Image 1 (tube, rainbow, N blue to C red):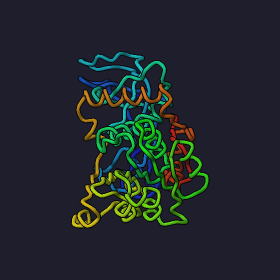
Image 2 (tube, rainbow, N blue to C red):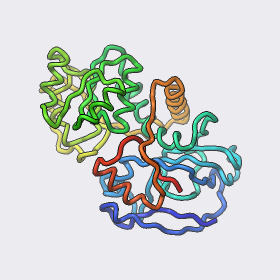
Image 3 (cartoon, rainbow, N blue to C red):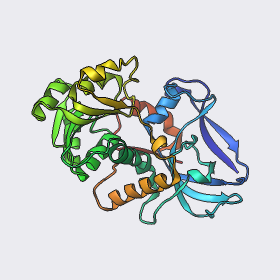
Image 4 (cartoon, rainbow, N blue to C red):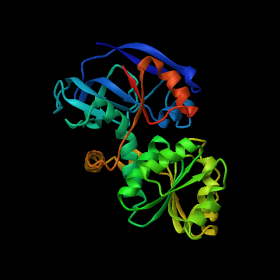
Length: 324
């Protein structure tokens, strides 16, 4: 079987993305031939392409996709026609079809369309582990969410409200302020026109936030430090601006015995039981209406480079999909 795959032979801008036709062999033991129906775009794809997260070259792109099993190799319980989804860690989702390790696939429930599965899985599971297992947020905590109108940010806000936290979100425009408020944020800080930390202190009676979720990175690190409550947690989970580097651990003591972590999804979803439980928790939150994932656009797979450009330029909203 022939398939189209995206590759990059050097790191750089969207222009480094190339398309190649490949011959797919029959799946071997523990493998599945999967045809993609919808592919989710994520900032980690850009980190791979730019070399922020180094990968061996030539590299493959994409972690998140939903589709159907075309064929299963020996020792695999899945069968032809089964609906499945994956968020990695193996890259290569930017493709019409590919060979996938069966252990990385998850069944898609009958009541979840493929486009929703591809739009929600990685981002929703990120919110699940950040809120419930990394920071262990509980009712009545004050929590700061940077980039609260981003795709992960909006899911984080909804998830935090579902567990009873008070949420402050940072945004840059009036439109984004409205989106974050509609998601449930109790207060909004416009970082384009006011300093974040003083405003957060004012909103929390001078205390600061017990937890800060920071997916922006270098540009918001100082504000995160100054917004955290004594013995609070800064969860730095992304590098949308640039990675945080050169951190003097002594600053955590000076700012109130803070603790900080740089978690990744795959360390919290490495155990198969945790993986299944986390994904089922996501589906249950969506079914209950506590988390809503907006699909902001569907684009042909061939337009991946242009969609990368839009994503980096903050010209997209909601979860963006590539359709083979």
